[in-house]
Length: 227
Image 1 (spheres, rainbow, N blue to C red):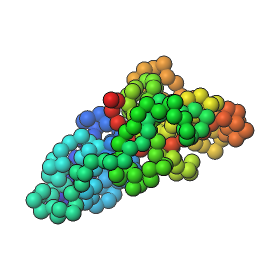
Image 2: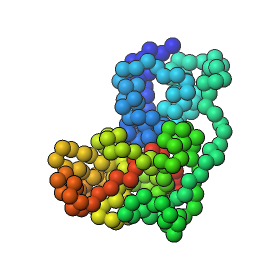
Image 3: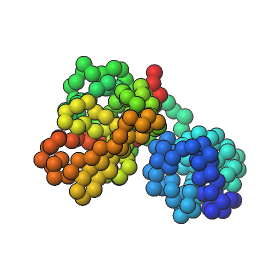
């Protein structure tokens, strides 16, 4: 079997060759960026086939290719380690706009529904997931205008600096931004190919006094193309 160092280096080379950031690849793989970093830097053992398949999804490569990189013969993989091909059956509404709080009862803003992968339901629970249609280009390096962002409602303490979150500022419609929280301030950064979008930040003491009121409604955990 391929040793851990070689495997991690190969994964990192493929990611960089494709122009994917660590965070973007981890999001596509539905795993934490910290774990993927550990894989790339050989701080953990070569993952199980089930986890390898997730990394393959994040890198946009075939399952057989990542198994080969890991030195695993496909025929020797037990059936229970393969990923289920059962289609997602749970749907949640897609909101075109979220403002001044969670969108409970805001039927006029519902555009349709989107099916959610079973693993997201198991991880966060259906009631803790919401779908938001992206409207704008401020995050187009990561999620394009018109795509559907799947957000998980989490406590603020569960959000890591750099995570992409849905944020409502001063009762305006929700926007997606990278969030950075510091002892004295909170900072929001766009991720766009367009230079017109700039980061902005607020003093923590002002935010605590609702000047302006800021609400983080959820962390981006998945995205789907527009349809």
